Structures are given as C-alpha cells and as structure tokens.
Picture (tube, rainbow, N blue to C red):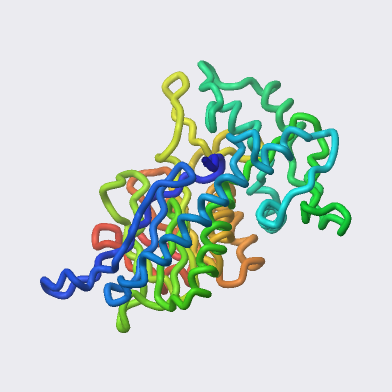
Amino acid sequence: MIPRSAIAPLLLLPMPLLSGCREYLRPATREWAVMGTFAAVSVPYGDSAKLDRYVLEARQFFARVNHTLTVYSPSSELAAVNRAAGSEAVRVGNLTGEAIAAALKYAGLSDGYFDPTVAPLVQKWGFNDGTAPSSAPSPHEIEAILGRTGFAQVRLSPAREQDRPGNWQVELALPGMSLDLGGVAKGFAVDRCFERIRNMGASDVMVNLGGNIRCSGTARPDRPWRIGVRNPFDNSQMLGVLEIPDGWSVASSGNYERYIMIDGKRYTHIINPRTGYPVAGMAGVTVTAATAVEADAMSTAFFVMGPDEAQRILPRLPGCQVLFVKDEQPPVLWITPGFGRLFKAEPEFAESVRLLH
C-alpha cells in the first residue's frame, strides 16, 4: 500500500450526465481498491464495450506501482533505498527512479514546500503507521528530526551501463533519512496509466486514483468531463463543478480527511517540511495542471504555503491553476483566474468566490 503522507485527496467525483430521464448518458465506470484508496476508469456510455480492456491494463499497472513504491513491504525498491540511508547508493529500476525524479522536481519548483523526505516527521506525528503521540512533540524533538530531512540530501543519477539491472542510482546522504513518495506516487501512476490507455486507442477516458484524475477528450460530444469539488468542511456537499480540458488533470488536498487530536486540538496529516509541524489555517486546495503528478505534488505544496506564497510560485508552472479554501467560516473560495474559467460554484457559494491576482 502506498503511504499517504503528503496528501489526503478530497473526493472529486465525475458528475452524472443526464438529460431529462435519460440515465443512459451517465459515463460507464469500473472502480476497485488499490494503493490504500480507490481507483476508477470511466468512458462515455457509448464506449462501454472497451472499458474492460482499459480496466485490466489499469489494474495491472497500479498493482505494479504499489509493489515497487510502497514503504510497507521490505522487498520494495523504495524500502531498500530507505534501509541504505547514510551508507550507500542503491540501484533501482525506471519506475522508482522516475518517480523519485518527479518528486525532486516539484520539491525544487515549490522551494521545498513539498518534500518527499518529510516521512520521519509524518511518523512522529502519528501518521503512516506511526504511533499517535499523547502530547505534541517538543521543539527539540522536531529540530532533531528536521536535521535528517531535506530533498537536497537525495542524490539521484542514471546508473552506468555495467550497473544494470537497475537503471538509476539513489542515495540518501544522511542516516535516518526516509523517502515517502505518497505525495507524487498516485499522480505519477495516473499519468503513466493514462498514457498506456491512450496508446490502446482510447480518445475519451477518465483515470482516477484516489481523487488524482486525468481526462482525455470529452464525456460526450457536447460535454467535457466535469468534476464535483467537495466542500472540505462537509463531504456531503459540493463547492462547485470543474470542467477538465482534454488531457488535463486535477487533484485536491484537505485537512479534514486525516487528522489526530492532541489535548483537544486537531492536527492535520499534512506536515510543513520547513517547520516540522502540521499545517494550520488551510482547509482545502484543488489544483488543475497539465499532468496528474504536477497536480498531486502541487496540491500538497500549495496547501502548505497558502495563497500568498503560491502567487510567487505559480509563474513557474505554466497553466497550473488553483482553488484555496482557508480554515475559516463562512468558507471563502480563493481562485486563480484560470481556475475561475473552468469552475462554476454552487449557488450557496457563488458570493464567496474571490479572485487571486
């Protein structure tokens, strides 16, 4: 099972496409459990005969990603990298090497607000099989753990030809370091699966892995794929509906999906890699981007940094758009202009939308 250290996606749901009582227009969908969450593949109703082939491809590929990138199995490549922290480089295959490369890319682009080495802090706070603390960790404990984190301490390079069968070399420079790819693994898997299904001839398809979604084409000739964005304060309610352009992706992070209570205070599972403490003040973030891995990683990064800092980072990410919901009542929806062109708020939230410039 892929750990979910850096993202707990709000459930984003494909919207039914109905016209009067013609229920047959609803997209055909298959859903199954994998990687500690759910996966689904959807196609327009008229393409439902092709769905079984696409689902078989997706099931096999997601299972392979889970086996390779999980930290819960001692036989996985990622577990081998973590065991060797501070001692030696480990050879890994393309799947692991490219997933780590993606994590390091977005760690750099986000100035470290997303960091795949945050795993020891996540466990200290009681998430990802860590023991829930009876009291908040002390500043001294947090400082000590911060001393063995930092994406700049991850050394990744292509392996020499004679080093095969591994195609990459990965080294964690500090003893006690640990990589957790939970913040990119689902988006990375969606992109690769999406490409495989497109290569099978699919032109109109939606791939969804735990709320990390990428869409191709349209849900029907006159209707793009539409996603319902959940209210982070009430999972039974939607903030609005988002249209997904051909080839684009969406992902969300929220603080009401996974949390612990210490002395009556709620602590989210999303940790600020700079401070070592759970993020406070943000309830939910939804990101649209050209790839699922970018939407996945940056939904976490934007959740940590907040809207003010995000406006400095966004020019580095062409096309990337975002919606922020701060942890305050009544909810206010802060959106970038590009997000606003794709998003229609529900009537009860229409007056709560504010543009970020």
